[in-house]
Length: 100
Image (tube, rainbow, N blue to C red; front, side, top):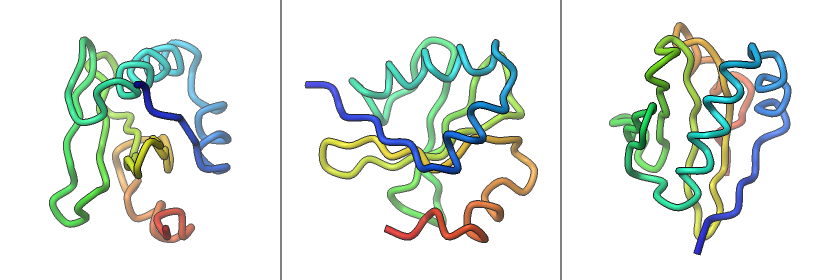
């Protein structure tokens, strides 16, 4: 059974600001994550963050500098944000998106 997808409000805004070709790649990856949230798929890699168990990073093969951060809670894929690699995790913490 596929997971439910719930993006954070700020993640929706960040996603809308991405170039269309990057959005398409992320949508493809998200569809794959709904069925296998902890495995890489064609065109993307996933990795659990060592400092924050339960928080995962998705990196696209075509756009390596852009990231998506997510977690899986029960039957829900929660997306916290999209953005460039540089300083992205710090921005997530500053906006309190990671509070559960």
